[in-house]
Image 1 (cartoon, rainbow, N blue to C red):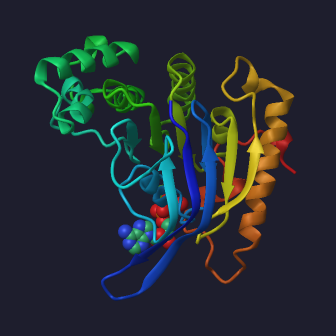
Image 2 (tube, rainbow, N blue to C red):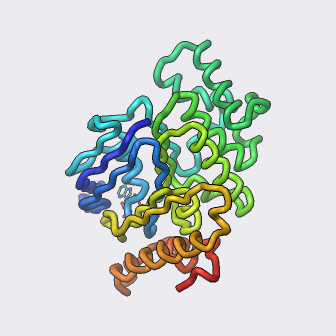
Image 3 (cartoon, helix red, strand yellow):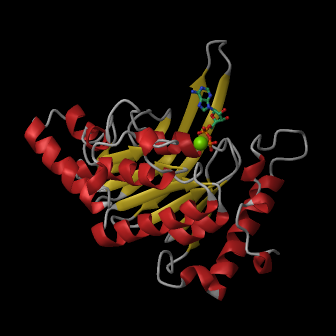
Length: 280
Ligand code: ADP
Ligand code: MG
């Protein structure tokens, strides 16, 4: 288990035409070892960029990112990163996909296969090791993406909108699977989402980001995340209302000049599963 520190981080993208986009500015957040947190914010606020920084795929222009107390200078062995869409290779079967992280780390073949098999078993895919991603359901593909991290013995898992491609029923199922795996295996988990309900179900703390350039607007303590009947409790609805209200504040700061989010699903009013009674 490893903690994560993002310390006053700025990130600027330079395009070929010399224009510059400030994606993150003064982003600070801390995740405890073994914690499950969610990051939510308007489309374009820098959520994916933040995750890529923690994964060591990008370098900040200013500030520092640390995992397990060590400055992140590139991809770290124990950090599993699940990009939007899962990042599975379509030409590899489930076993080959699960073993990919180990292959990159030059682990010998016999050891890779053994660890990949064990990970497939952990996520309930033992009988599908020869199946290709296209032959698996959306939920199974999500399990496979997690299995890849588990095979590589990750103590940190970062996932970018992991459930956005799933239908509503599979989505809810997978949210349970993810929390069950996390409770069982105890890694540190950071998930980016733009669903309020999902954030309140999955995150022991929910970080609400401002519109871009992103930083943390508010942090909501949410200790009930993932527990038994949390989703149907009155507190759950109240927490959703609170996160939705905070998200609304970040929208207000964006003004009416058309600079708002391009993705309508990112607006709090359009959350896919809003509990009606929780609306302000
Ligand atoms: P989110 O995941 O919250 O939607 P991103 O991290 O993808 O936000 O993007 C943050 C900002 O940075 C946006 O304005 C986006 O257009 C910009 N951006 C992202 N990736 C690049 C890139 N490779 N080059 C230039 N601009 C980028
Ligand atoms: Mg994104």
